[in-house]
Image (tube, rainbow, N blue to C red):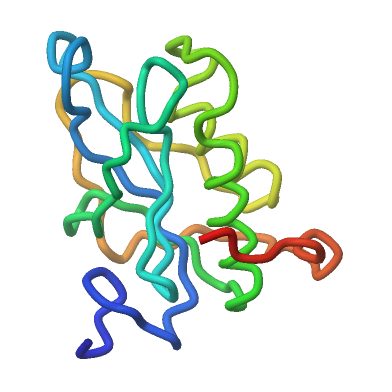
Length: 154
């Protein structure tokens, strides 16, 4: 794996990446929509809302490109698993309504639930403005009580 937290499993990375990519499929391409998701560097796993119908398209998220993520550091492997599992459990709940219940709101809700202190820096539509790979969020790591009861669902 070459100790690469973006393209491979990195047991020492212990980071969640808040990532962005262009949304695919109709009607998203019509509006030049962007899609955000969370990527686990430990488990090489991404989770994000998967479709406008409220059901996941079945497409797996891929490791984000350099400049298309904000690194959230200071997590234990257990905390990272709790965060990525929570995203997996809530990503496709409810009726998809842009700005109210979409990939941006789901990711932000998970970030807020774990008190990670990060705001999504990209807009829902238009050009994706790259962020520096050195961008590291200052966080208040989740407490063990927040992560208890979570286990991997994948």
